[in-house]
Image (tube, rainbow, N blue to C red; front, side, top):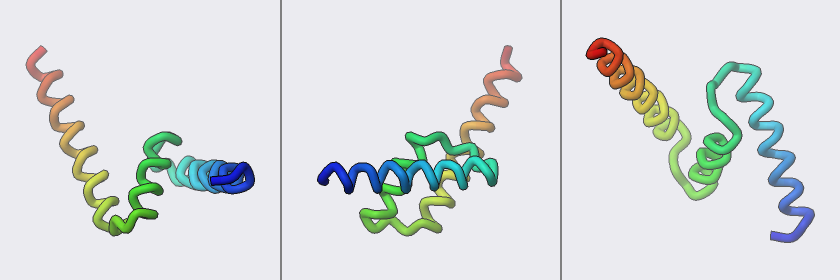
Length: 70
């Protein structure tokens, strides 16, 4: 990718991150970049959203379980 392409990609990521922040998605810039890259490589965005939601549920359940053991 040339310098202009890198700059366009950076601007697009900045815009996507700003929108994600406005809707309180909880996605940081690195995670958002990974998710965008997966979509660009053909991963179904709806399926990806489902996986992210499930991972968040699992993480919350694990955290809850570990706190109750303390």
